[in-house]
Length: 204
Image (tube, rainbow, N blue to C red; front, side, top):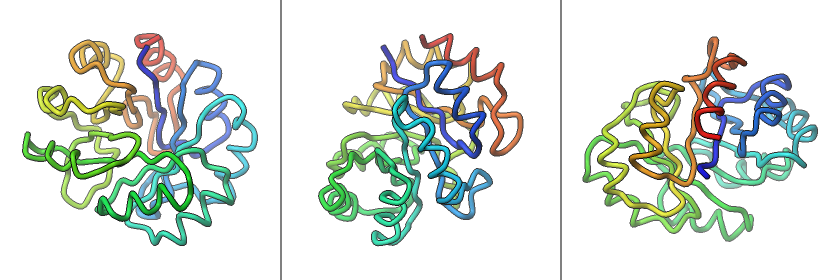
């Protein structure tokens, strides 16, 4: 069964709702320019309450390795997601140094971007819609033929997913997991319980 990652968690209620509804991963965004940014103190408090029930994912964008290490250890994060312009070498070094699984997010424009996947030895690849200067959470979809063509193992599929299109996307691409953020929001950083429930029910 396809796993579900709820990204852009900023508060306890949304985290607990996601756990109770059956999500598999929760994403916490530590990119300060993101409208869904969450501070490490707040993230730590949320993770402490749900760490036995779900996997936490720390989302980082072009952050210094030392800073990533500090946040991961302080918050008790399970998986690291690199959503910036990090190199394959950086990702591999981080994976080995922290002994944590790593997701590399890649912005997709065309089939040529699929070649980038082969350069990374991360545990997972996340495909999202490319938008210049924006790192995830665009709410825009991309051509699913590209995701299918990528044929990546342990693929997280993202990019404009919602309750209306996720079933078709899963049936077509057969990803390891789907990643949703804006498709289940009331506004930046706050989830809509009804939308979250409906999205998860389509998958589960």
